[in-house]
Structure formats: C-alpha cells, structure tokens
Length: 150
Ligand SMILES: [Zn+2]
Image (cartoon, rainbow, N blue to C red; front, side, top):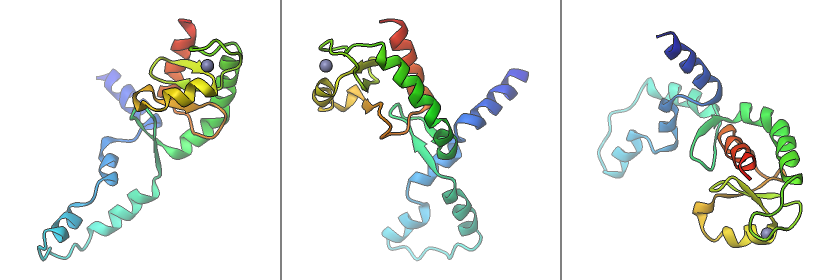
C-alpha cells in the first residue's frame, strides 16, 4: 500500500492522470451535435473543461503523455545529455561520426542521411537531437539503454 502511494506520486510528477487523455478526443457533447440530437444544455461542465484545457500536455514518440511545462524545464538537461551521448557514438547504420539523429526503435544514434531513410517508416521513431523537438523521459531512457549496449 505504501508503494502504491509512492508510485502514484511519482506518476503525478512526470505524467498526467489518464483522465486528462480524454481531453484530446471530442467531447460527448460534440458527438451529440453530430447526431443531430438536441442535446440538453450543459450547464456546469464547461468550467471544468476550460481548466483542463489550460494544462498543456506533450506526447512522446513512445506514446506517453507528459505535462509540457515539466518537459520544457528538463529540455536543456536532456539535450546536453544527448549531445554527450551522440558525440561518443557513430551512426548505427553507416558508421559516420557525430550522428545527431536518433532512432527510438533501437535506441541508437544515426546520421542525417540515414535518418532520412529511416524516416520513411514511422515505426523507426526517428527524432532529431539538435533541439528542434522536446525530448521526454521515456525516450531518454531508450537512448541511455541503447548507448549502454553499443
Ligand atoms: Zn549514417
């Protein structure tokens, strides 16, 4: 039971409760409108929805949702860690030095040319490490593991 509490707290820190996922999908109210039903006027619900909308989320390439503000705070740290990792790496596909793209499928760094090719298949989850995109804790973990095993 104590572990459950810790877990819940940790989860709150990094991810959002699943109830927030509902935000991304159209509301039931909209569905009712599409069906042409004269939906009963919703009175108190809108307030709650507005509050939720203000909480901005960001989704990792691995499908996990995070609080955008927390991820933005971590961005500098994550990118400097990525730089350290890719400077020590060679492109996993062609062996070129200083690859600054990543394939999250394998947790490996690749050069821009190989990234371009891998990109055609979205399952490779190709991502730039140069600061264009926010990186998320789960993605960082994949790269740390990938670098360990290289
Ligand atoms: Zn390459």
